[in-house]
Length: 240
Image (cartoon, rainbow, N blue to C red):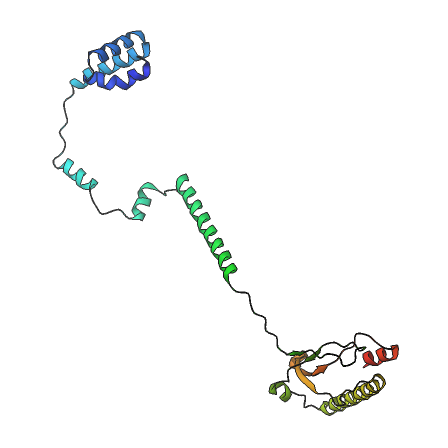
């Protein structure tokens, strides 16, 4: 028998719960080991002292009151527990469980959002104006597609400037249109093209400083040439 087995069986030995072989092994080990022998001697001395003590009688209804207080079903409030025991700090296990729960919630939210983004249809892009592609009549002529812009709304036409400079703006625009029509007619006669003299324009309101509003005029039909026949033609196109 070793010291660990002796300490384990010491209480049973003092209460007489071991058989003959167990008691013989305990006594033999106590004779061989100084520390275990001292422990068994101290235990026997305390047992002799306890035999001379008289039991103390408890007050009346003491045990029943203690048991009733222990088995009371009404729990104490949090303030009472805090006042008696002080603050209760979370354990390492509870902190680890909370961190794992937050990580799982975040991962589930991210996966759900990414799944919804993949399943949603792409946003549709609306085109605000029909495009008409006109094939060139002359094989040697290279023209770009003709873009037809939508007509101006009634609000834009009603928002035209009516101040003192309205007449000047209108006369300047008319002179510019006449000059452009004259150049277009000369070029059409020289190149075999026929363009209308009067171009149809569309007016768009443009906001300006100090809550002012300007009117931008754009032609409904735009014709562009990729190649310039001469430098003079290029200057006339960009100078105005």
